[in-house]
Length: 447
Image (cartoon, rainbow, N blue to C red; front, side, top):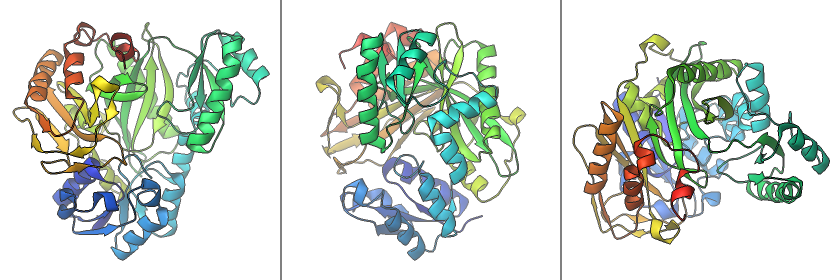
């Protein structure tokens, strides 16, 4: 097992990794930008190094700076968390060249699955259902017209690189398709440096369901069941839960089995998430693989009892998984609300600033993962999430009631947060009945 690990991230996930390492008897080296200097969680690491100015492009994303900190800190491995360099195959390759273990998949697997076009080809080879669409990238408008007429409008244009809804457009006819192609390519080029796009049949009102997997270096692959992430705004997840409500057991099992087949085909190791959309008839289709730990990983931890961060570290160190698929039991229901420093009444406008008071909820089955505290200043340079509120109860109905109670207890004064919006969602009849799809938020609120 490792003696020292560098955490190439910040905030909530950095603190989560520090805690896991402490429990495993592993020393930690934290990095920070000038904007995060003085953050309380940094004091829990054994060492800490500044890697640059506030902007992430000059600090957390500077590979040379991160590697320098790792070498000065004399670490054996780097945990990238999520975001920043977590899915950067070049960074994983540099780590390997510097003889530092990357706690994640190999650069080759990351590259193969990080490109949505090659990932779809791999899915087809693994007999995993994919959304009908182009076989590869769309090279010209005439090809796009031909494919769209074959699969039928409406169609979805998607960037082959990146995510977060960038480079994505819906077109309902030939004229709209031509303009949407141009817009999607330009946005993808600006966001990811890759203008490549492909075409898919647009599935109306789908659910977004993802399967958590773990794979070791000895050929063992297990799934840890599914999470429903359909409650989202502009392709950004707001609430995640497990199990996915109203999902037939046969569909659930087939989806989990498909996720395992896919990662085996890719020779994938470590933690990852295989994402699917599910249509109104409960047909599921592969969309992408997130080759990293997810923000919503605590949902899976609560229902399975498996510590995913500790598992990542053990697998990276060459340890075999200590359990088989039959050992992974799903118990109860868990829900996570992302608590963001945003003002829902003003179009979810970011709300950075000083937190004057913070009171965290507690009680049976309540978990609050956050690096924030009273006196902490939320910087304007990074993602606005300041914490994750997770609950676990025997049934979904009880989990909803528990979450509403916990949200009512949570006090964050001095800035705006998304707490009031989560309270509205959790009391909406469609959410309570488990009838949420990816258009639920836009359909019911002006966001």
